[in-house]
Length: 484
Ligand code: GLN
Image (tube, rainbow, N blue to C red; front, side, top):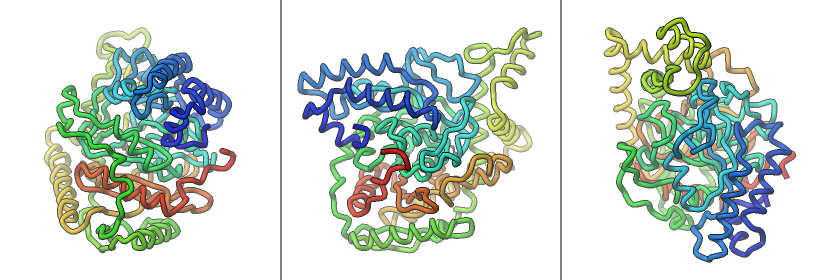
């Protein structure tokens, strides 16, 4: 059953080839048998999953179940789940049982989707390799000596190892698309405001957005149908109808204008990765698209601007973890100041502390104008580059990340090398645009991702463009060694 895509599983459930209970049990057995190799889950919830599956089976038997009813998925451990530990992969929240569900968790519950458990990630979603998790690193199913990408590495490894047919994830600067690329998956980060952030533990609120990791674009479209919603509890959520994201999947691409930014093919890009992206461009030409060379002139400023804005927002967001209200509290504090200091010093990992320090510095009086205000101005210029580009083209295409999965420890000593992993994905978050990654080839037996960026709220178009590629290629059907 684990070979099937979500689309195929929905058919199988309706044909009664298997029940949701059987399907859920099958995935739980696989997780129990295989996940000690990958470490993709922080928490597995078998009892809850089987109860939800039994309820889904009843709805399926009644005949009017929603599309994804009975499909088991995993949630990134950044989304609050009632009664289940929500750790954000931090010692700080190791003991935190959320008292409510994130809106997206609630949306999937309402649709009869079953939760298998919560996936591993970089601590507070800060990282590109999943090496900063309090629960240990996640291994890439394609090469277990390599990282799965981050921060949604647990969700990516779980789907790539067929320990879930799909998973939720979050993307602040690339955390869905880069792990999708490194694990050979389809990952979509929707437009900022398309999906509720309520109950998603905040890292950088103006950049964070929830999305999905699946094997195909069709599955991503199915998952998007329940993920996207208007939520009055999130003031940045946009009140706008949710289309059926599967409706346009089969539209032909004749006349589609694809922009290829010259800045995405410069120094630092692995030449074999570049060759696969070039080959993907040829596929699109055959499908009837026209290719246009474009320029996004402020691309080189995206990583520096992000590493002022994201830490600045994180330093404010993470101030709530003070040892008083919830989460980790140090032992025997001398006084209140000692309680704050030691709870935070002992509860947060190094990368999180680095971000809080950088962010507090950038926001401090005297430096605010030089760093934070400047970064916001740069952000505006980056957004304008995209707005100008989308007057000429429908979709922007390039690599997702500069190279395939790298070995554990190879970038941990050099934060800047790690930060450059997101050089092609970060600008999308700064501009608030939707982006998607699909597999487009292999380098040294490891997958390579193709990134597609769309105009605001053009998710249906992006999924159509991705689906058509997957109808003409089989990269998305390849599975990691040992994963039958
Ligand atoms: N790798 C980037 C960072 O560490 C992006 C993380 C993310 O998208 N959550 O900030």
